[in-house]
Length: 148
View 1 (spheres, rainbow, N blue to C red):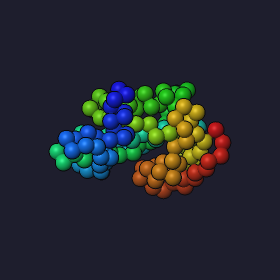
View 2 (cartoon, rainbow, N blue to C red):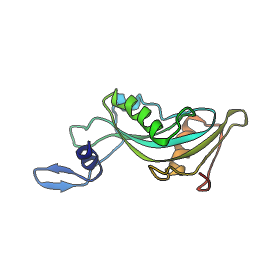
View 3 (cartoon, rainbow, N blue to C red):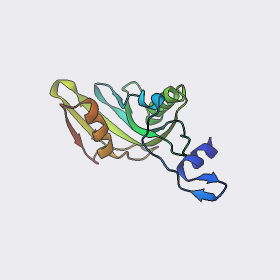
View 4 (cartoon, rainbow, N blue to C red):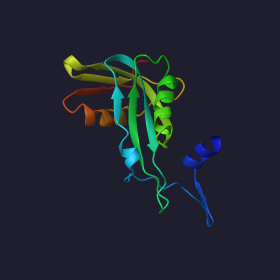
């Protein structure tokens, strides 16, 4: 597991030496099947996750960012575990990029993204907003670094 994480984050070894991973968004049917956002109504913790597809023949590794937030999960790690288990079932690797909180009010068409995760650090709330806007096109999505 550690070898995979270090391998994915730092470098790939080839016969000619080391180079940084070439990570592109490319076509991978399993990766494309993963929903970009899955959040509930109310106030809850969320995580921003990078999902990796199968490495391509040219050495590139497709990826996408996803947002997950569930009210029944007490900890950010519970959310990440649920999401990563689901992705692993498809043969995909994951990496948690951070977390925070979401307040989702469908009747007001409002989502607030704020705070941080003590275990994973603060997610990039601007990236989270961009992902949520793909699903919640008619919503006002506010981000803030304030609060926990």
